[in-house]
Image (tube, rainbow, N blue to C red; front, side):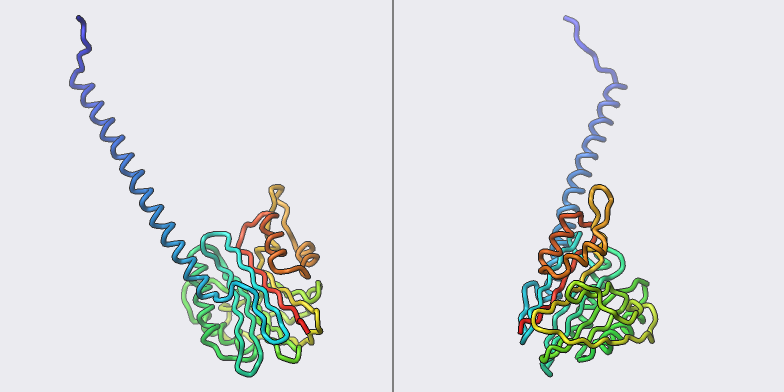
Length: 259
């Protein structure tokens, strides 16, 4: 009976093939372990970020109903918001957007949240100035756009803006003095605009993830659509942008005077 004889050359080739296959399989195992570890770490980072953000549901304080919605495009994001009652009866609302994406932007957003929580300023412009000085001294570049609103118990509000998208007031863009993003120039100044909110009035602050949502035809959600739906609830606005085609973190905070 004829048999197949494997010569030494073929044995060497077979051995090399088995060794290569084993190495590939082992690398797959390591990659999978690394992936699971990374997913676990990113999930922990997301939980930590949500903890720092604090409020994830509607806040009712005095005559105001404040509704925040946050939808990061990745596991963690560079958007931020804070809703902070003050001892004098006012409430400070801060919405910001860190340049860049991913973990580095999320770390910067967490830094800003911590700085806002430690700042006891009751003035919108003073809070932005303090944040700006803190960020301007840090190394590594980058900047943060930020809108700060002080709400008073009588319905009056003051708004200061640091390069952020202009808030909408009852479906129209507010007329605000321009301001540099935080972290660009250490001695930048921020001007306040005072308004009076009547019962039923709504202020809406967006991050650029709403405006820059892009559909399959590469058409942006844009400013016109954002303005048209700016009187809807925060959840409706955020969901409209997400369905259109989310490409960046989406944050929407609405402030409605109830009475």
